[in-house]
Amino acid sequence: MNIHDHDAARYVADGLSLGALIGAIANLLPSIASLLTVIWMLIRIWETESVQRWTRRKD
Image (cartoon, rainbow, N blue to C red; front, top):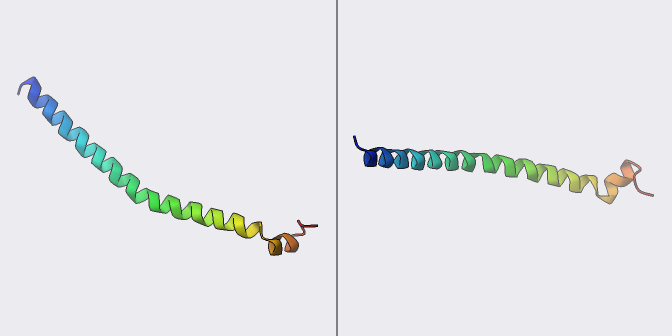
């Protein structure tokens, strides 16, 4: 095996690892987005006038 074969094998391995990384991130992003959506909605509900009255945070 010469140096060019090693470089080609390294490029293929790098490409495969990049594909695996993108695949892993793609599977995580929907979960992260869902969690952030739930947090955002809870903040919005907490800031409504009704909840502020119930918790006596509004004058």
